[in-house]
Image (cartoon, rainbow, N blue to C red; front, side, top):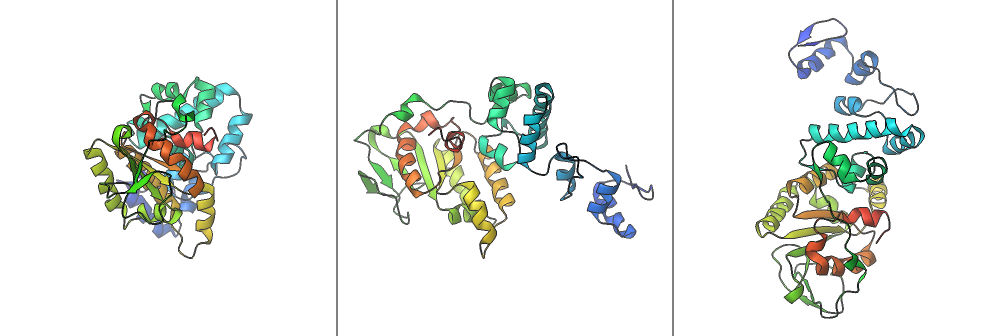
Length: 305
């Protein structure tokens, strides 16, 4: 039973309590901030209320404050705190794998590097909460090798404004927009998206269709790299001023869910632009399976590739 802090009346669930609060002419934000006050660990200021889950789950207003606090706080305290955050997310979301670089970023979680600093490796931190990371391999040394001259890139016939490569051919693909043939083929595909395409694909109206494409990828025991030609900071800034704004929290949520639902068969990366995509895609396709378990966005974001 849940008790109303104002009148002590008992309720069987939160929904009933929240309905009851209307009789006191008080909003959820007013109720929880007044009767369950929480302070920002960095600033000491009252935490803002957006919804109940977020209010009790967050100790900071944003990720920057979290990272600032970690930089100013004794290592032992930080180590305990960030492991608790990871454990809480694994259990609350019922995850079978530890979050990727993108998931940590879009969920306002600590960085992979912060876990590496305090636990020796991100894999070790994940093992302490009973999971393995979604991506567990390092970037192979072959990444620095040039793409072989005999690589032919197949471009799906439905691809609009395709990238240009020295050796390419138009071909209808089962899924994705780009693949390679002959001896270099190993079930790896690239689905190239513009900023607008990415948001549209993960919106309510298109989500099921894209989920079906990922299911086909899985059924063929293949792998799809979803390559978006922008960076997240630029995309978020443009979205704020767009005449047709998208709910980025909803978009990122769908991205995270799909990454886990089709673990071992897809990953999302943001290259920064068309030129960067043109450089990365041939390497992704030719290295293929050697990259399936590599968190490419970590290397891109940290400018390691």
